Length: 260
Image (cartoon, rainbow, N blue to C red; front, side, top):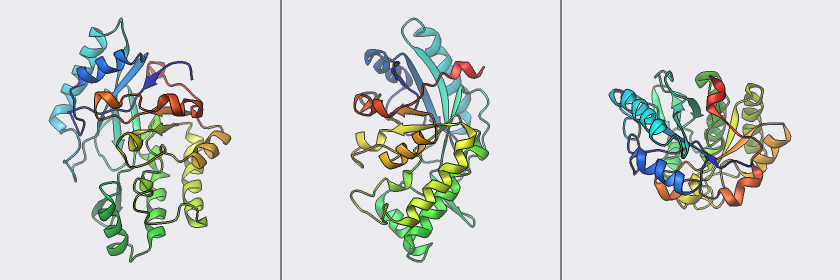
């Protein structure tokens, strides 16, 4: 794609490491045309990583200030990464990234990507050792993300594989895994939501390739899905990480202003 744009990054309003202006300045220095500052939606069942409810208006207001201050240098947009189980409104944001970070089993919310030991514990204790059962539950949930969030962008489609290279808990080449992700993709494709090619796990040392895997990217592209690059940056240095390497996989550009 011709324009350098990155719509998935986080600040210290949630689990990012830097303030909003530092992220915008870095995006300018990296030559981006558009930057989207996103916040993790408030999740009442886990407040450890997300924005607080009372800070949502301040986040939106500050993003507006950044839009005006840097209008002649970069286009700034205000986004929300809406977890599928968040109950907060997305009103006031320029765009929505729909993501699955948890499995809801009975009344429990189980984190998908906290760390490898936690994932293995969930497989062992909740799914009786059936790793593919956990995978099916994850992709069943991902398949509902557009219906639940009305997102513009599907976030890190195969997040369940975050630890697959260093601590493989299941086989991504198995028929069961293939069926699970294809069923989720096929449910999402009619929505016309874009899928992100997310390089965040590469910059943080978890994976050597982006979310989704190149096999999934190939399938989505073959089905006519729009794919955009996202860094999921949590610090200024990681904005647009790997875009030069993976830019050829992108098939679309996204302009939040076109929604309004």
